[in-house]
Length: 488
Ligand code: HEM
Image (cartoon, rainbow, N blue to C red; front, side, top):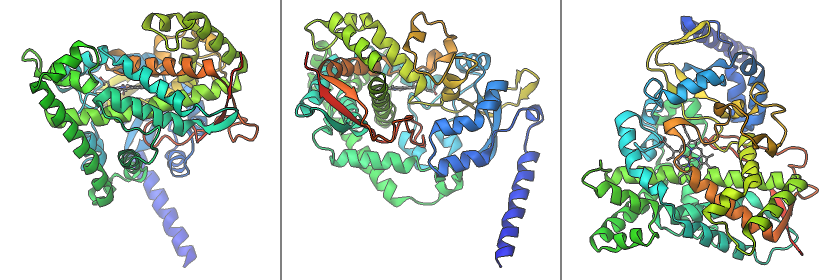
């Protein structure tokens, strides 16, 4: 019996391999193959991207592209910078693959709908025109107030470990809720807030790798996940409706005039302008969902990894602290002008985002027509992944790529497309300044008050242990860090 089962598995495996081979398009025959089995094992065994990169490094450093079987088709993984530039700058030739196209009938497609991050062409332009003014008018007061609240919550802490990842997640979610749609999750003080728990569970459910590896599963009902989704959608809908009411009462105009409006209020104002295209209430909700996803875990991971790097590189920590004290003097939080003067801190931030890019690959694109690359022809409609983590860790692009060297950003000598933390071209991240502002304010307050170190018995002692990136963002496993008050 056992023998029969083994034989059946073997035959299915060989049949699968033959099927995959017959599906290789002619133009991709000579493109090296990246192992699907390695990817499946990595996803199911919860490996971090550093381990996955080790499986792919040789091919990608040598050839700049590789092909991998994913979701029933051959996908091209790219690290070659010429091709990266082509893909990023020619958005009409390389549109993003929409969630509904990749995973029809999936809850993930239903939840995010059509929004500024997942749309193409004129639809994307309409969303982006409404969102742009909001991101030009950041609610600076929210960053400052929230960072002060973080310091209050940490008030009693001295010389003891705190789990930095969940602290940063709670903090950045509070910032995002208030800055994006004026909602206080109060997650710093109330870790069990019902909306936060629902949101976290929903994101985990939606990122379940089984539904990406075996996309036919999306045809089966997922009642529990759907319930969580409806709960959050109802919250977003209520918020949108309240804001629409406040346009009528004139309250929104007041907030816009005195600079205290949130992103949603700017978007509602922009889409009420007869000169501008509008967004429906559903579309506004989809954008809030995407801001929550794109704007909270990413910055939380960035802050967590930078605190780890500072804790394990005390000389860098001291240099950043000295710079803060010199540039800010008695000011607690940096003005926009002071932020530009924090040159060394900005280098450390860039180097952290290079080593641990919170968005380790860009959204999948496809090529609208055949593309010639060296002696290969990528046939039209091939799925393409720009592999940011690989680009950032390739020795073709960076000297000693695994080393933490903030100074490499001193004169920005690197190739423009070798640093893709926030993407590039017209589809680059809308929240760059949002996130950088938040990171700088937080670092200024934390480093002025505390010296940060890694406990002796940390699992991250030899190397930062990365969690799998199933939800599309990358970060470490929980990481307790010691915060000791500065005495001078
Ligand atoms: C460290 C923090 C962040 C990182 C690393 C990051 C990374 C990225 C990357 C790589 C892209 C490009 C995706 C692609 O081309 O496929 C992107 C796009 C985007 N990001 Fe961010 N992001 C961060 C913070 C934020 C924040 C705070 C927000 C909003 C509050 C935000 C909203 C967006 C949006 C809306 C897009 C889509 C832009 C478009 O397609 O026009 N991000 N982000």
